[in-house]
Image (cartoon, rainbow, N blue to C red; front, side, top):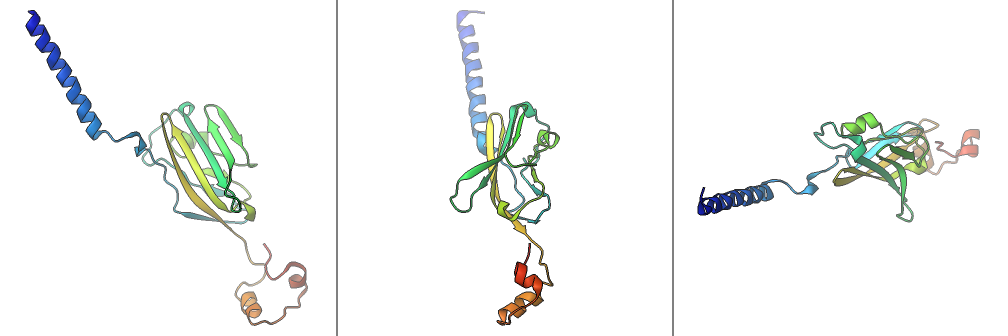
Length: 180
């Protein structure tokens, strides 16, 4: 090869490389395509039951959990501050709320759902899932609604109380019309 043929070949390689970069830049989605799916805007759970708050990467394949992280937060309804509920990264797991857990096997498949056994009324509120699959990060929020059961027959008590009729039974005097 002569010097001019080598220069032409080098120019063709450079042109091809630049064309490939342009194609990838136009067609490959940016890093923010990574999303997590939550189970709607609100999830409802019974008092004292186990809540499973969903946070999943749609269509996810198997991941190396050593390069993943998940952190769950709960927002205080009064002051808006967030408290950590659970965190997992590398081989480190920590539950800031007793019993909170995320299954490492499920996380490997992109499912970072949080389990909270024995949910109490005070735990109702907004929960935020923050998931990292290196080098990308996504988050989602959901409102957890905790509901209790009526101690008496529910349709009768509100109707009687709404009419202004005094209730004199021992249960109502001691606990109020509703007990959770």
